[in-house]
Length: 68
Image 1 (cartoon, rainbow, N blue to C red):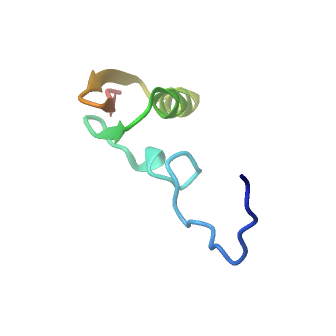
Image 2: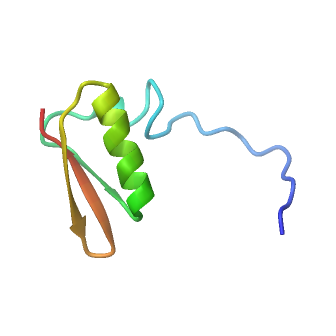
């Protein structure tokens, strides 16, 4: 069942936004996410920003590294 929530603040920082976590990644840094779709979203966002990435399944999630 869906509900309407009011007065929920918008987060200032996300993973994919212009000033988000991905834009601050340096070569060799990594991000751990829990599901495949989120991993793919991060990889596509990095590719859009001309960053090279590498990912591997790790335990119950995925790790994505910035490699260039």
